[in-house]
Image 1 (cartoon, rainbow, N blue to C red):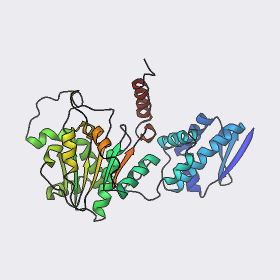
Image 2 (image 1 turned 45 degrees about the vertical axis):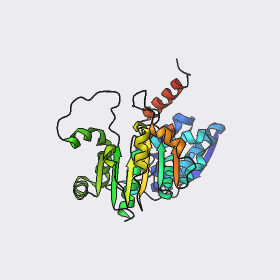
Image 3 (image 1 turned 90 degrees about the vertical axis):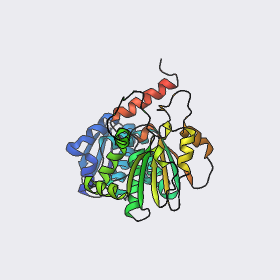
Image 4 (image 1 turned 30 degrees about the vertical axis):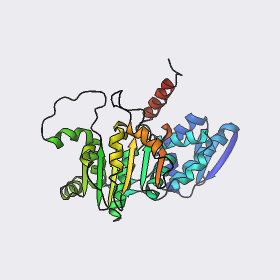
Length: 320
């Protein structure tokens, strides 16, 4: 039986690592088969030597994350253990201490994985960024957070969010109302992110003044967008012509983020995805960055990560 002691900086950090009602203790025990107890202002791990060493790597990473102000939720602990299993826990040092922005409810928005941190760093350092990856990785939400940060920092004067109005495999039928009413269902995820950041009252005020614009991609044609932060969501459902049209709207002192999941293309079989083409055409151009998310960056329910892995295996022919 082996033991290992890890010191904590403060009782608050110790509490964060143990989790609400010591939930994280159970998670570490289940993952590594060791006991985890509080001793002398730190953490003692007890168990087989090999398991204790593995658990110690995970707990050290948890201490680093909590020191940076990140919460240690079930998803975070699961992420840490997966990074330890891959021998990549040292990469967790990249996670930033400062948040991206603060929501209307006072919540600090932070990158929760190394992949998310690299994505937000790319957005900060480049004029155009293409974020490609599976559902639940925070592609759109973090892009909106970076847009809000740029707006509040007076780096842009407008936030423009757009996406193609392509149905996800089903027919919605006739929708009542004017043109905006008809396309609003497609834009709802973008509205939700902005509501979270600004609050309903500020969001409505900015929409009325034209400072925030949420519109279908077709509305972008013929415009030049200066001093704006522009986000194209669900770009896998654009055609080659549409994404070229969008990219050439870029004006002075503007930034663009293009997000999409190339495994969820809803275009008719005869149409090629503009995002897939853009990934080839734009490679190597200075000030345009590409970021690929993996299933490790999924921050929704743990089953979302499992579902993505299962579909990847199926597409690779490992499941029949």
